[in-house]
Image 1 (cartoon, rainbow, N blue to C red):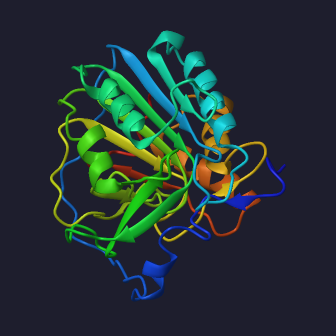
Image 2: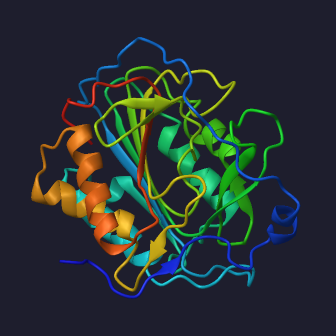
Length: 290
């Protein structure tokens, strides 16, 4: 049974970068790159659990179309995390409806709060639901020549290079960050080196020159870098599929979860392929843990 009906894109239709896009060359064929041979095992997550949930339907500007389900996504993820043992006091919400709006500065502050005191055994979760876009790569670290970004409440783009510096690079070894981006063009939004197919096999390295993070970082993205994410009144298909998959079968492996998410999304929208990327090469037969 489909989980949504009428859907809209979470990309940049009529966006800030149409003029830039019109003069850009076609997307490059990424191909395969040599994989590192080490395999990462998940740590025992016996420490603190903290989360940030961000949902932006419309924001302040008019450059992007209004979305319908992003705020709902943020609330649904919060409720899901609480069912997984996260305390309400340790979940920071930023939406159009909260007193503190998800402006770029407030999102940076929230991400910094999430990671600043992280230590061995901590489990952190970051969820973003809203518009995503891309701009031409500025420093040569992108295989496809583009920096992906999220669009904040004040219409400011927050590019992947800066998201990674804020959210990923400060983390110490021995903690885990799980990120979920339900937005267009989000496949490599954290610039993590490893991506996986539905069989759990590593396919390529996503970034050219970034170093491997110390922490275990897992990123679930709603679409590839050149795809849009569908939006509905019931929320984004990616967020719905993530929750549905884990509530139907909580002890799924990474491979099983990726396959389930992709199958659910595919039943509802054709040209959207959720992505799994990681900081270290993982054994995708291991159980996914939050």
